[in-house]
Length: 296
Ligand code: R5P
Image (cartoon, rainbow, N blue to C red):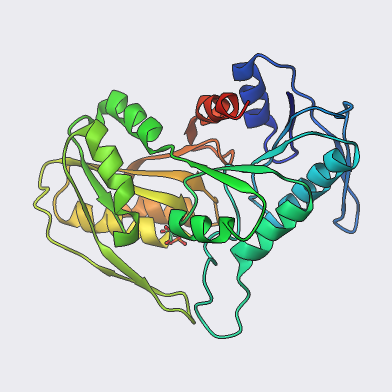
């Protein structure tokens, strides 16, 4: 197996290679003045199973392009199976045509990966498991969706959040807090969030949760602008929670997001290394390495 840490996941790619006990082979890479990427593999791949680790944030378009260049080059040089490990899969939120004539972005991305020779796609807490399953059948790529929620919960448990209440800011992500509550043990619930399809404005239907004096964790798959997380944390603090943690798998680290969430009262903000940020205290390297062993 040849593990290639892509330009956007050098740290995670190395950690995955280390967990598998193989040498990592990062690509030669540079970005030209006009923004185009140059990619050259550094190890012959003919007949080998190739694992490319490349998250797709920040700058999703260029990270996706680099991924396609790496995969297609591996295919051109005779690789066997090509596994794309894309812990944060960009464009996964546009999994439906919410308005007429919209691009079905997720479908476009999976078909591009298929055309580039990717045989397996490993993602972590993809935005919507059901949409992945419905799109998967249309293409030749097998998709493996892993969950980092148990890892985040175990970490929080050790950091003083045993027995904390788990809250999802959105009914659609209730499966996340069901899993978290099995580890933290303090029960779970959800708020209902709606987003205006044109303006993107969020409305949250807040329930009274009787969490006065208790610790709580708001879990989500991702933090982007921070608006969703900040609203949920603020509501729990206003209901008298003693301490509220903000936990998610992917932090996109948009300008102003951290300030918003901290101002709402969250402490700590916790995420994985699916995208490397100052909040990446939990690594998904072993989780992914275990899946790669299964795919051997
Ligand atoms: C959306 O449904 C996701 O699960 C997240 O809640 C959302 O993407 C977070 O975005 P933001 O941080 O911009 O509110």
